[in-house]
Amino acid sequence: MSEITKTSAATVSTPALKRYGPWIGFLIVLLILPYIFSSNVGVYTMNLMGIFIIFALSYNMLLGQGGMLSFGHAVYFGLGGFMSVHFMNYLEDGSFVFPMWLLPIFGGAIGLVFAIIIGSFSTRRAGTVFAMISLGVGELMAASSLIFVAFFGGEEGVSGDRTMGPPLFGVNFGQDVQVYYLIAAWVFVTVMLMYLFSRTPAGRLANAVRDNAERAEFIGYSQRKVRFVSFCASGFFAGIAGGLFAINFEIVTEENLNALTSGVVLLMAYIGGVGFFIGPIVGAVLFTLLQSILSNYTDIWQLYVGVMFVLTVMFVPQGLTGIMMMHTPAWRMKRVGGLVVPYIRMGVPALAMLAGIAGFLEMIHHVRGSPADETMMSLMGIEFSTHSIMPWVTVAVLALVGGYLVRNQAPQLKEAWETANNPDAGGKEA
Image (cartoon, rainbow, N blue to C red):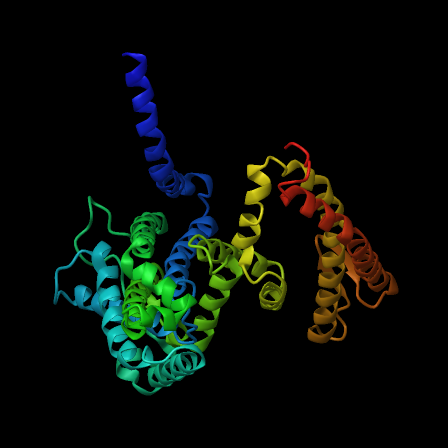
């Protein structure tokens, strides 16, 4: 092979690797995860994580791409789940012959139908009015789920059997790991489809309407129609997530379409970063880990998640993904190494401060929630009595000293950050 041919092949392969490399890596990660986390808890967590990734990305099609703040997105998730579990029961009765691995399509179709119905009037308005309409629709559906017991099953919900239907290559999805690969396949396909949608003219127009609706209207595009298309696509993918939830848990209840679930998906998308496509994925992974792992160690894990959400809204509105993307200029100029030491000097006291605050909250919770004669508690593997003065002094010292050092190190971190991101500054090499 001549040098010209080699150069041409390298030129062609580099853009292809840049374009398809992340997707190949994503697929490989999905395939090998069950071999790394093979325990029952690990598989359960990954199944829930995959469902939440699809759900959070579908919500990001509304908020992140279209600028539509919805408080009722769980409606399409829950209805997709309810219809899927009912269809699952039809398979069990022998009324239909339908492969179980295609059931999420049915959930997506139901989500799309209700998105068309609800979106036909809700997308006529934007901003606060749209948010209030979505909240009202969400509360209406949540109330209906307790009234129309024949369909929604009341407080007990509706259950099914995922092993019904013709098996796929001898797999009947009786084991959780088999369900994982089903969810992983749907995650890969739906994530790719939602990414491609964000690159279509409809997705680009949704960004334009989000940024300046009047200008989009002025150049000839109906902002209502643009919002309606994004709304319908979002409902479709949320219904797919609901169908996967029904397959994984074999039960769907009122909790799957109430305001709490709508708040959870908002929290996942916002903490991860609604301004980036990968942001909701990061938020879904983080929230699932907090729900599945942190809840095993503390009863007030939801308080920590709420505090994280408030701090994100106040100080880091671009989310965790935005924080990572802020390092792009320093990375390109090879100055990230100059931030390592300032981060350590800030991070260690910050962890001490957070440990002190968390210890104080855990001790308060133990004192208020435990019987009067139960004075001993365990925190981070350490047994101590909450009636002793030393534990309270320890957490107070950690919080106060850590907070003082954080405040003392903040100017130095700010100076290092400005140096690393200033093109005219002579930053340190990574």
